[in-house]
Amino acid sequence: MTLDPAAAAATLAQARATRTPIRAFTATDPVLDAAWAYATQDHDRAARTAAGEVTIGAKLGLTSPAKQARMGVAEPVIGFLTDAMRLEPGAVAAALPRWIQPRIEPEIAFVLGRPVGSRITPAAARDAVAGVGIAAEIIDSRYADYRFRFADVVADNTSGAGVLLGDLRPAADLPDLTPLRCEVSVDGEVRHEATGAAILGDPYAALVRLSHHLEARGETLPAGALVLAGALTDAEPLVPGSSYRLAIEELGTVQVDA
Ligand code: 0L1
Ligand code: MG
Image (cartoon, rainbow, N blue to C red; front, top):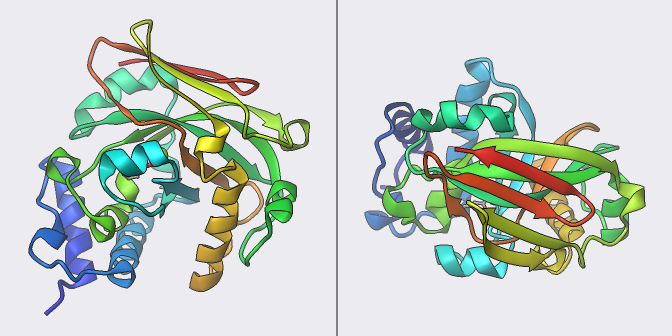
């Protein structure tokens, strides 16, 4: 019998709370599918809501070839963001002990100017965004050594752990995000480079994809919701004492001292 999604969500919550990584569920149950995975994620979200967390938006993951290749999952994944995940850059060092194996990655962030709940075109996706900015996402897989398959990582809320948002610019100022250059440096050394096109060919395509997901689930994100379009590059492990600089042309930088 397939593992109960409520039980899987509880196991993941326990892993998070005790900072003890677990084995991927698909290692013992390889037929677990997307429906099971999103049902598990929904249980996790309901438990967090019951504990007082407020959903503030959504995140896409594995939207770039660099991340798909590295993680061995060839399909984008979608998770949720809550207010408890928002962090200021100066708070990261103190927060490190709450994670198992944290990594940091550069993202393009959108703040919606109007609700999104049904399928939209790329042009409508641009029109739906009020503000665009750089974000640093902290991911922290609850699976040992980040070994998982599609269903596992979706169930684990796509490894979501923290979000640091840089300054926002009016989206109308930046109609084309594809050429913007991104650079990730660790302790002054450039480790990763990409452009906005790394995200599904166009970061706004991530919002189109999210709109399909929301419509299928009968869910709407309101104006003001935060959407992370996915990492432009591979992630870097957060090592205590190291400094991280994530920069995207026209969008600014996020600087983190771990
Ligand atoms: O936000 C992301 O790109 C993470 C998706 C999950 C895969 C991972 O843990 O890197
Ligand atoms: Mg990410």
